[in-house]
Amino acid sequence: MSNRSLYFVTSNKHKFHEAKDILENYNIKLRMVNRKIEEIQSDDLRKIALHSLKSAFTINKFPMIVEDAGLFIKALNGFPGPYSSYVYKTLGSDGIIKLMIGKDDRDAEFRSVVAFSNSSIIKTFKGIVKGKIAIKPRGKLGFGFDPLFVPRGSKRTFAEMVLEEKNKYSHRALALKKFIRWFVRNL
Ligand code: ITT
Image (cartoon, rainbow, N blue to C red; front, side, top):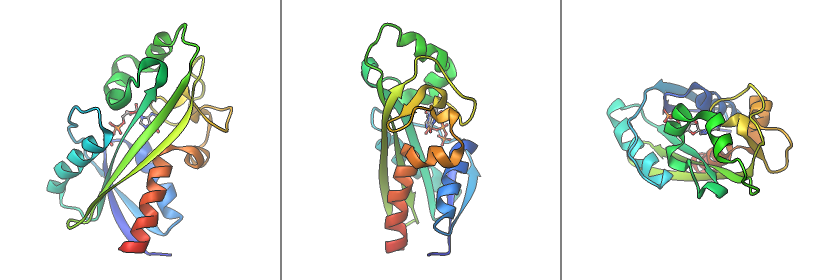
């Protein structure tokens, strides 16, 4: 077990708490740097995360991580994908449910890319969780599109799960666990 600390540059306290809960199990102390980094427009979460990481360098708190995530819905050709943040603010979960009216294929996935730097190294780690879009939003926990998403292996939406349960399935948890495996071995 390591005894290290790390900064997470994000404006989203939910993302921070989810990550903190996972890293704590490995004795890695996570500190939030509450900053909204202007994201570039790209179809590629990894490119967005790497760009955000480089912008975050001005904050000068190393080692640091940033994360970019999105919900990709098969019947909508991957929408909202990298535009999830904007689409959540404009259409919201109800807007997505409307777009899904008449669609039999409810398959979707959440994707996450965690980007790490300690000022000399940059690495990225990907996590994907497959699941389905619920018929209507359910649950009050979590954030963003959590009320819409039922991960494979569960009947509940992410918004019906406490944080520890969401962390057993989530895209963010999967990306972070890959990161941790690398981090404790290499640094
Ligand atoms: P930062 O960029 O400051 O970290 P953000 O909330 O803008 O925070 P993202 O760009 O990574 O984070 O996320 C885009 C949106 O995708 C987010 O606002 C949610 O609407 C949605 N999203 C991402 N991960 C999610 C999750 O675990 N549960 C529900 N919605 C999620």
